[in-house]
Image (tube, one colour):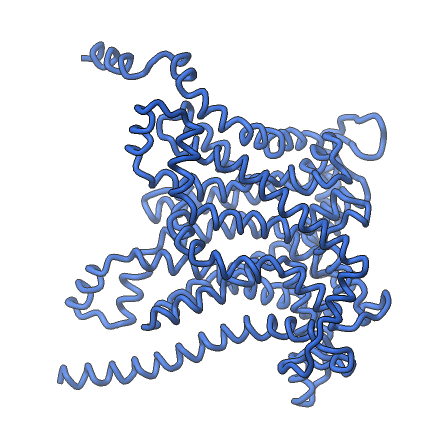
Length: 309
Length: 288
């Protein structure tokens, strides 16, 4: 029996050499991409080794062991950046994450197909604007001299607030601009998932006496839970790496609340040239981010009985 | 009794439908109004913006601001942006499409391994510094190539194309094989014409990602003549802002003209390929 099986596999699987020969064009097509991945995604991983050196200041690079990590754990600027990153991440998950799902459910309630299409078209637009454009739009909206938000505040007798330079408001600006830009992207993906929900399930729920909202909670949401978890995982893999949005929108007046791990890495590494140390900070961030994503994946695979990644 | 119940529910449904429409209308307004303001301010005459109003209704119409912008230093940045986006998108497609096709073929040797090579980069981001060192050691710093080649492939886009191509019946490929076509011919003659909608979506994704790049440009490029529009716009909006205390005062209509240029590809391309775009994304995006 065992022998037969072995024979069987030998018969189907030709020797590797023949298979490579037959697939030479396919492999050739794969080659440029794989070289790109090797050079720009995997070779940089070797660069993480520099976290254990003093690379940057001297011509001669020497091994310093865990000194960079010791330095970062005792640096108050590092801890401030760490705290800001965590706070912004929590804000992002709590305030941003549910919104695309809610908007998708609301759009799904519309009866007119045309209206559904039109709204999807519209809310997707900001996703294609750069952070510079989105940041500039918020500078306009929140300007203390002409921004409509401050005009409203003044109309109610309040003092105009310079939101972009106010440590008390900067985080809200970050979250709101994030919602403004990303909401449509998430919503469109959820709407696509909603169209795959089996209508028979609705009928069954109706026969069981489920009301409209009962159906949303007991049928719709469970049907798209794997999409919800996928989106959550994607979000989690980005939150700690938040960078460009902050880099565009922050200024020295709000460093205390705005400086995140990646902007800290950028300043230490590119602007100050302290490369070994900045790689140590970056590595810390990447590893924490990886742990966060993998543990969520593990948790979700228990919940959904299938891993997403 | 049951009838009464149904009537009550439909009444509450009606109220909900009205509230729902109001909420969605507000969401739409929140998106339209700021973009509308940018558009009409960019065509307003100086007198309309001197009072520092947030324009909601157009008072004047002039292309002077665009004329001013395109006859100034911004023109170079605009050209650089176009160069990076066009050349970059071409390079990205030339690498991504064949790679996606190879990965879509189930019989590919070590297919699982190659897929792992791609997907691992989605969960593990090595960060900016090691990436910077690689780009620097390749001698790319301060070249236009530095904002194209190191970011040429997006794993997402490759997976979207691959998923779409996987959904094309393999029998088409098999029969072409029997006719003696090699994989390059199959890709160009059979697969690409069937993948137009997904390719349109990915071209938009790539084009916009190059157009919008900001931090790679300031990280890799020191020569201000090589700056792209986004870098110049950031300087104009955030650093020359009078309230942040710096630079010459630039009227808002001129700023908004630069901003419209910064949003240009989206405003032009998106409406045209939106139809392809949504249908393409459906297949690829839901389950990657």
